[in-house]
Image (tube, rainbow, N blue to C red):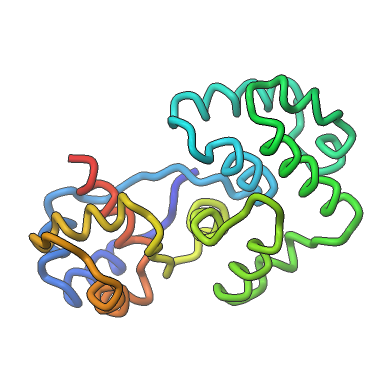
Length: 199
């Protein structure tokens, strides 16, 4: 599955910001994979924190193969050492195990979470061990497919923005100006900024 957006969103962003619009025309539609299962997304994001994407993919594959079905009930029953031995730190294993147990006990309802507005989702996710603002925002984009998330904490987005507009530096005020320009499709703008930052 890929992040869903259509021509009307591309047209809207082009109209709001002709500079971004030029990049959209050159790059065309972007297909970025999503993980609609929020629990899987949480686990995958924790595994990927502060390690190279290739290493993260290897550990994630190993985790999926070991658990067979990545659901809270199964992960909660694993031993901490069992999770750690799949290739991650004990701290990450503790985060994953703790979140699985919290969901399994009914202390956190991921379906209810998806009904909340963006700010409330970030607040709720941040209350979980191992989940900061950036991770919550990535989950909102790549698991919940929220359309208007542009992360100040993401270096790739900032680098893409600086390249797009020829900026030497990027302060919060300038970032917020562009965020308001892209709204309500900040997540789609982010896809293009990531693409530009990778060139």
